[in-house]
Amino acid sequence: MPNNKYDFTNVSMIGRFAYAVMCAERYALAKYPEKDWKPLFKWMWKGTSDYFDEWYYRFMEILPEYLYEFDNYKDAAFDYLSEENYNYYAEFLKDIDKNMEELLVTAADLTMVYSYTEIPGKGKESINLLNKAIKILEDNNIELPDPESVSFTPFSEKHGWGENFDGTRLSIILK
Image (cartoon, rainbow, N blue to C red):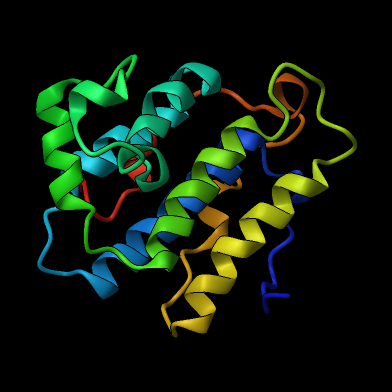
């Protein structure tokens, strides 16, 4: 279990998602500083202002497990991903490690863990997902984002989901 001293139980689902994206940004910059991460994180940060399910179905098509499932764009029959974006992300993500891939998947999973249902209690399963992202950073000696930066979006809003906001203001890549 991560040595996380912050309790995310009072942070909304959107805030938890935002924290996972912040973790992914820190890992990306630490491990792949030569890459231009702006296009990917512009897409990721839309998750704080779009409906989670709509964002997820668009974003999942660039996750490596889906992106590389087929050898080419035409065989894949993507619903949202253009051929131009397919080619871009297929090249851009080809050399990322399993941790970076896991951080992308974890952020995506956070948006769907309670989809189309009520959040049980304080959403322990989502906190467990968030702790996976935290552990990846800790295991790689990467400084964690400040958990207080998402405390403005309380779990008490919208039945735990929280109010949408412009997450790019939390980004260290898009600043």
